Length: 118
Image (tube, rainbow, N blue to C red; front, side):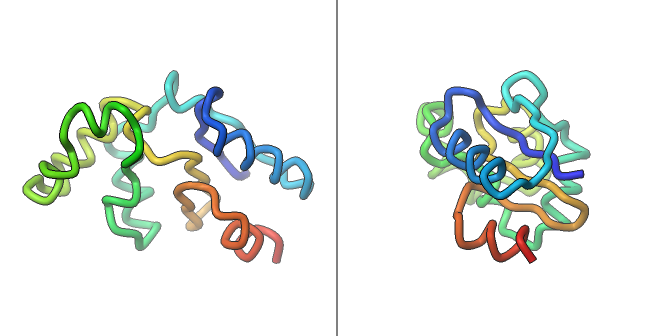
């Protein structure tokens, strides 16, 4: 089953969910603000994804900017970054799609079509 972590007020999440619905892709919706993945889960998703850990951060979010993370992240360990991501769902890039070993951060229609509509 595909899990999609979203924030209900996020326009990108709304576009992604509409795309999933339009393409008849079944998924479980998880409110990332209410049910943010914990440290172990984020670490597992990060390791499976093959992506840079920075790709899991919502770099355009207010909390990211308020905390000055663009300057702080390069000096933080992976463990510290994972702990930070687990501390607040609003720091996590969304939507976050998880299906087995497939992990997608953000919504890029071409990438989602390529990975989900095989």
